[in-house]
Image 1 (cartoon, rainbow, N blue to C red):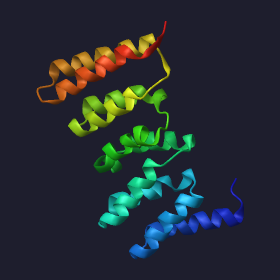
Image 2 (image 1 turned 90 degrees about the horizontal axis):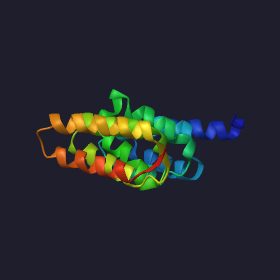
Image 3 (image 1 turned 90 degrees about the vertical axis):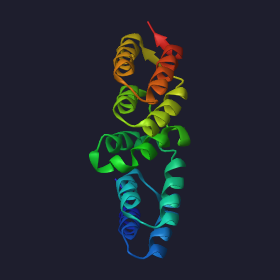
Length: 177
């Protein structure tokens, strides 16, 4: 549980993220870098999808790419699966390879996103799975390769090459037999 003083500080930072004053939002982002907690993540990405200010957008993206707290992974995955954040899905996926957070336990989620998503999402997913160093269950990887085979067969755009590349990456992962 957060101490009252720290909890109050975090609540103030979160409140400032939705301010109409750019100066306040930028200061809140600066404070999040110093005192950020995973509880602020959704407010942060809410600000990203609502702001029209390019400087604020870039600061938020920079902050997201600097995340190091593995505790935020589940929240990022939930956001990736939430239609509300569809417009920034590629950014949310790219957090994993930009920040080096380990999302390997969600490999199925990433592959599903690549199959359903557009070319940009596919590129981000490919970057993420190329950086996995974990060992995966043989059955899960075989299921994902089957899903990719079906998607490759159905795909009629340039994305087919990306899906083939993903399958190649899956073939190179460490498998637990």
